[in-house]
Amino acid sequence: MPIYDGLIKKSNISKESLVHSLGLILPKEAVLFDPEDTRPYECDGLSAYRVPPWVIALPETIEQIQAILRICSAHEVPVIARGAGTGLSGGALPRDNCLLLSLAKFNSILEIDPVNCTARVQPGVTNQAISNAAKPHGLYYAPDPSSQIACSIGGNVAENSGGVHCLKYGLTVNNVQQITIVTMDGELVTFGGSGFDGPGFDLLALFNGSEGLLGIVVDITVNLLPIPEHAKVLLAAFNDVEQAGKAVAAIIAAGIIPAGLEMMDNLAIQAAEDFANVGYPIQAAAILLCELDGNTEEVVELIKRVKKIMLEHHASDIRISESEQERLQLWQGRKSAFPAVGRLAPDYYCMDGTIPRKQLPAVLKRINQLSKKFDLPVANVFHAGDGNLHPLILYDANKKGELKRTEMFGAMILEYCVEVGGTITGEHGVGVEKINQMCIQFGQVELKQFHAIKAAFDPAGLLNPGKAVPTLHRCAELGRMHVHNGELPHPELERF
Image (tube, rainbow, N blue to C red; front, side, top):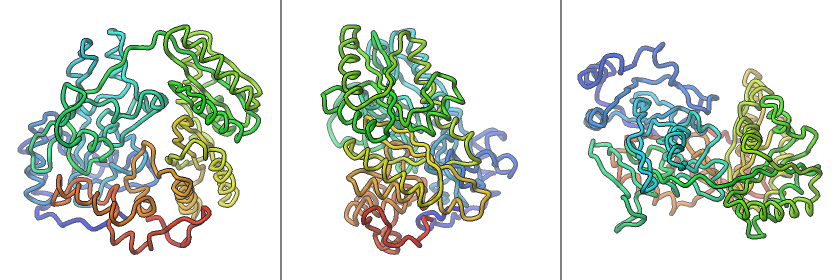
């Protein structure tokens, strides 16, 4: 069970009174409080931790959200926003005496503007639905997390999600033009606009990755891009994982920016192939999937250059997609990796760190060493082009102490990422999962600034309390754990 960072204020309203007040705003079926009704909301994608929600509200209009937040603000009831529940860091995990605000009913695409190449959507719209709606206009939404058929755009904004194509086209923050939020006291505020720049502070960027700590996002305008004229995927197999890592660095060093550049190790390859049957070379130590897009002539030339680099780094086999169907099939295996790995063990723990690309071979070596030390298998799936790692640690929660050992393993991976010049997250956010590692990533001065920003938007500290940003007291208790040679100076300390 996670121990959240910091205490929360005790609300001055009983559960029964809160349910009654919400019932004056929402239909009866939109207020959940019975344990059987709230059970589906007790965790997000980080399912190792489960907390029964206190009360759940399911509004369907902005006016209802404003009224709900005014009630909660008046009675000091903390509010946790929840989208599709696909998050992987416990960002939407409930807390005692908190209202869980579900945005699932905000699932309409409000406008597709093919002239300005934008889509205006509600936060509950799935990522993939935007591209589907834009496709008849020859447009698409570039960020594409592996969970894009299920994850919501509001959650993408909260976590600043990326995906396979973020190497060339950027994260969510690079593709959002305007958002409208509701503040904790019920006010409606819009950041951004129809242009690409505006006066004042860039608060639009601030909200991307804010993890629900600053406001409730209710309206989002995203940028759309023309569907590329031509795209091909090159699959290269390697007998050595470190050579695959070096090939990634060489491609970027050559000035080539692929649309996507992904890496999978042998365990991930076998799992994905057994699950999706896409023709992956199951004997390879690692594969790279490199997508190149643009006009036909450009793609042909880039394929030649990338193939040459792969061979120089001892690729044992190279395959190039010959049709759009084959291109999508090769990506299907990669995008199925997470559910595929889920078949290998009763549980797995998905990590999310980012490193400088040149450190990829060293980090892969370190993960392998830690895997042997903790006696836990790891399937590695990487957004290799931008250094975003997703080691999947396999474990069995039913075995005593194995979850704790898995957490320690994951913590050491993240801390090693920081040691080599990287960061503890690339797109999954901090939530409750990485709250201790924030004390390593940032110093006292930076954390004070984070708290000042939080206080400016939410002075009572009612929005998603205990998530993402640790208290200075917590970091002091942990001794501001610096990493030395990949080892924790206080390995006996639990992560939560």
